[in-house]
Image (cartoon, rainbow, N blue to C red):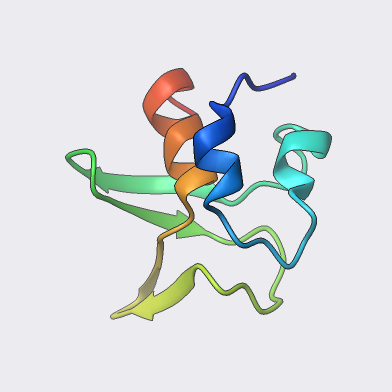
Length: 77
């Protein structure tokens, strides 16, 4: 699936993975386990690798990636 993400969000996001989530679709994307409003999403990582936007929080990971948050907000995935 191709995501339509506003250029402004992509421009302000630093991504060490060259925006793989936009290229791979759902395959390479962390799964959202829980969301708190529009601000915080808790995810289950697909791979155990570093990500500048992923932070360990209790027994889960919070994701602070603007692109990933927009995909969840706009598409519910």
